[in-house]
Image (cartoon, rainbow, N blue to C red):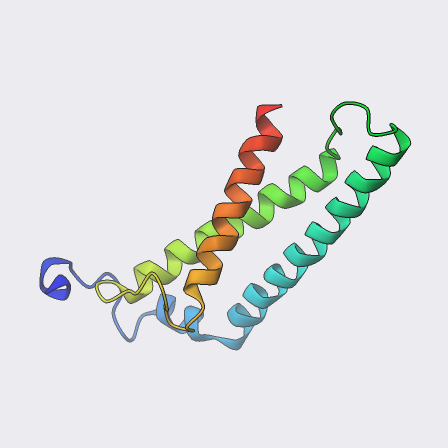
Amino acid sequence: AASKLLPRLVRDDSQLRRVAKSKVYNFFRSLVIALDAVLVIVELSYASKEARSSQYNGGIRDSYLLVVFADLFCLIMVTDILFQIIIECPRFDLIHGRTGYRWFNIIVIIEQLLQMISQHAQ
């Protein structure tokens, strides 16, 4: 029913669809996810050291470089999920998606957006 209401946004033979299915693009997506996981570990290590050095007194200042990388990865992941939904429209699944893990990607993006809001609100 939804496929009759929403138009198909990308043709099967389009360059956009070829990019989405390419090994280079999938490698880039995987690399961003892996680097984001490393960033989380680095941020936790940094916060732990800062908390210890301040004797757990007051808030911990964020590292400017870590905030920039977190914002960049968030932007890439939000852009990617929007790109995937556009490619799949009108038949997109917000839970499973093309790979079966879209639910996990959405949770990661929500976490990143909340972190970004808290870092920039300070």
